[in-house]
Amino acid sequence: MTKLSPAKRLFLSLVAVLGFLHLGTIVLVIAGLRDDLGHADVGLVLGSKVETNGTPSTRLRARLDRTLECYRAGYFPEIIVSGGIGKEGYDEAIVMRDYLVAHGLPGEHILLDNKGVTTFASARNTRDIAQQRNFHSVFVISQYFHLPRARLALHRFGFTTVYSAHAQYFELRDIYSAPRELFGYLSYCARPL
Image 1 (cartoon, rainbow, N blue to C red):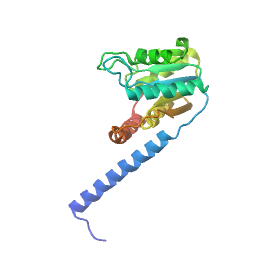
Image 2: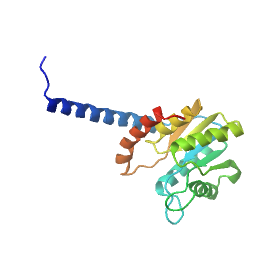
Image 3: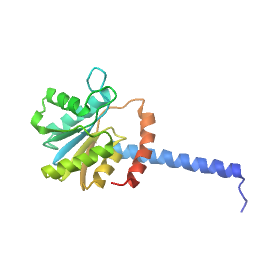
């Protein structure tokens, strides 16, 4: 067997790492694009940017529109809107609630989580709400590339039944966001509760 030079070993290591990242990203994207529809005790829509005028960004609006679609289809009777206060100064959860109410969803069916500053925090807060309200299953809505990590976080916080649907929105930024999500997913695998 011939001995590889240090340069060739470095090159092959780099190719292996890039191959792993590429394959991992593809697996996460495919998993996120495959909706897993089912009836749950509660829906969970994860927050995203609010514009400087206080309206949901296009990405967040797509999540909320998909939430409305799934609610109207009867997949869940109540919804948790989860987000934090962004740099724009708006409480994402309140903006999301107001959007859903303006589009016909009864306000009494919406639960606020305004401490969902990360996906991990949203999953933990959903567990706490679920314990208070006797929910056992959850249906999560977010971007396709974000759903595998969101499902993982919910499973880690004790939900055995997690359904999901992705927002019908794609943007150029996804080329950056989808590969980055692999690192987030891997970090959630080892993150302590």
